[in-house]
Length: 210
Image 1 (tube, rainbow, N blue to C red):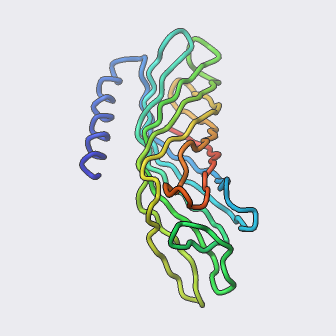
Image 2: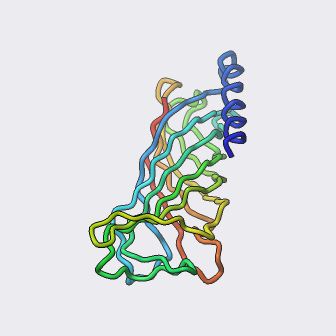
Image 3: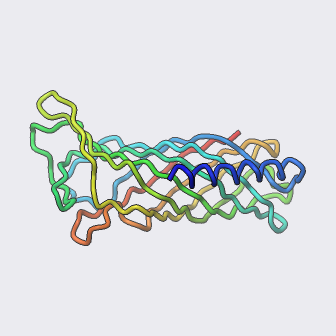
């Protein structure tokens, strides 16, 4: 895992050296924050505040008169606060009164691939974007408080590979900095077991890259 991550990061940094002498490429670093709607859960399970944080290295390559391809490497951390207990078959049920502040937490490494369509041929200002993200999920932890004691347990049988579809809009400022609002629609479920609870974390995030 660590070797593969370092290889991808090194490849992106090597691409930056080439991009410095090529105006058709832009490399940006930044972060994003967003909210999550855990779709698919039973309506009896109460959802509280759920969030996601992204750290991104992004490369944009111009294509056509107004278009551009965007890719890179993204580290994502999400936390879904749900008033639920996880049984051995990854079935979620309403948590008893003895369990408080339950949350499902996950980290992932992701590679986005999006197409951007700018309103101007200068590729500065407003754009629309759509595409997909592919990634690897790890560090799946269920945290909760039981009788005033904080506890955590590893969640097994989680889908290790993920895919999300994207649609969003944003703007490039002075041909340098980028901001965009992105809706990420999960294609793959959180759990990989056939009879586990259905869980699809829908994300809406705001991202700023410098």
